[in-house]
Image (cartoon, rainbow, N blue to C red; front, side, top):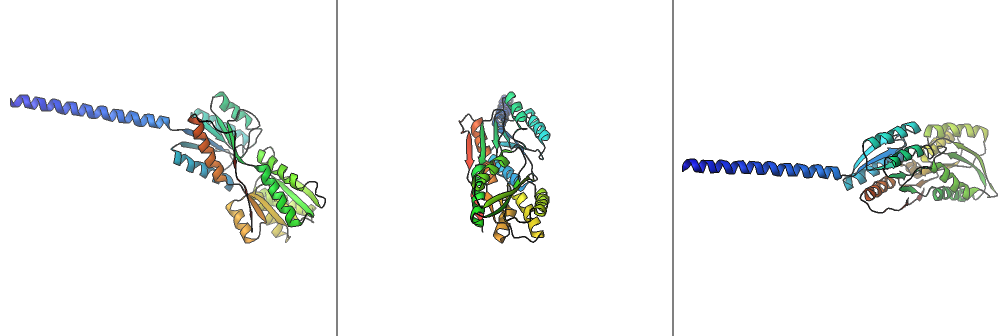
Length: 307
């Protein structure tokens, strides 16, 4: 009898262990399935050598964390060829959707078309793509922002004076649209003359160098509109070194620019809220992957920052 009870107890223990193994295996399967269900987003950023795009990336990372999505970030370093390679790499990593911040609106078309062929949806952020099929675009209204900057300068100069325009990277939608809005405001104003419009590629050092050269050939300058804050701060450095009194307006409202405005050095900057652009990009991407309908354009509000 004792032997029978021992055998029964052993049988119960074996069944329990098997049940436990079976339960553990099911749990592992559920965890794996959950991992497979996680939305995987690829983000190709034009450059992380610019505070604006660092903020955009951070906003995207915050939204990805909140939604439980996986975010893979690639820095194109303002190189068109590298951005294409980065996008191809993200495609190979089987991302569910791509967020692309183009280095160049025309050149990025090839990358967008590659994603289209792989049947991976594309959302552009801050800058548009001139080619390929794009599901949605997340950005500020750059035309409105450029016009806002121009109107501020007109008010400051009382519609009379010489203005310099520092342009962004040629071929980018941001440079094109900000310039378009600016000229909508200042062109055809009788007392206003744009004495120089030159690219400084959204770069602070180039903004400094280009502004130094412009000051040498155009001593009578009253205002500068730069397509971003980095160029504006570079231009301001050149102006201060030349001991000139010239109002400078930037675009993006980076931390350095806002501090400069509060200090009274930079005249104004247009707040574009890059964190919100990145965050909205991820939120829309997650919605799209889950099969929800998304709008073609998601505008992010602008604000004039002045002292």
